[in-house]
Length: 189
Image (cartoon, one colour):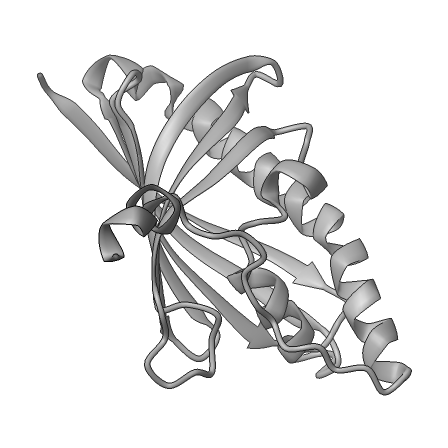
């Protein structure tokens, strides 16, 4: 099968400081709740802890059910790694559509307002060659998707900022156990 690959850079802005946005960027468990219009389920399959303890994980293997065109359920598998401070790498593959996305997601303090954060995503998309005529539409869909999710994430960021203002600084953590831990718990005995 022949494939077509294209790159797109996505830029969005949050009205919150970079440390608040960074907390939100590391969290994937909120995806099916906060982003219900584009996602319907999220499964954390395996988690490799961060050896430094600064982040909730170093690497996460996951499965997500997205809503293509807003309603068609399409399941993808992905791997996400915290590559450094304010940088995440992610690869996601949809076996049904044979589409792969590779993401390098970064955060930058806004130049015009250091209390705001610019979210810059460098995305490489590989699709079957037959999808090549759809490149402009896929690029527009990615821009729309990230813009909507950034706007939806502002409520998460607002809540974290409010908690900090009250002197409550909860550490970011994972709420669910990875499926790996659930399935193989009895083998540890």
